[in-house]
Length: 173
Image 1 (tube, rainbow, N blue to C red):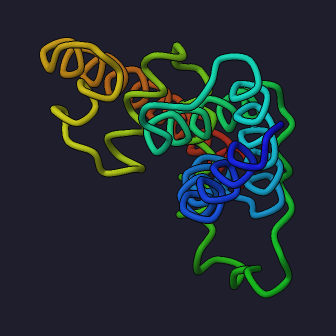
Image 2 (image 1 turned 180 degrees about the vertical axis):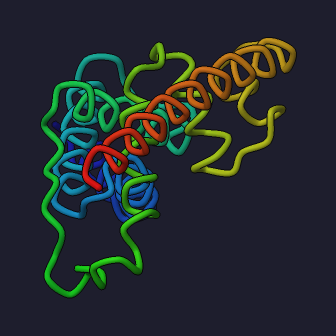
């Protein structure tokens, strides 16, 4: 690889590694998993650069790749559920938000890849429908339809999770 291409990849990494890590962390909820996702994304970028050449929009590519690799890890059950000791909550104080986050991650993993990607771009990356449409090369109307479907499916899955949790709570009493 010529020095120029290596320098370009170094610059892309320096500029965007934080974005890739944060995107992966929002989905996996775990720093170690986010690091693994980040390594996979940049390894894929290196391979892509060697075969297909330079990217037109590295930020868009990296954000989408981070979402997809993180979702793949969640779907494959590779996401670690360990919580660093400094983040262990008081027994009852933060139990519900942690359970909600776990249920949301499970629900996200059940979506189609397109639905999960659009949902993550909208609600984790805070992109507008217009920006998502531009990044994915689809219409804003299509983005809105996909988001509606994704939110409906996630809401139904969260309702099922809460119903199961409430049923388990009643049986425990």
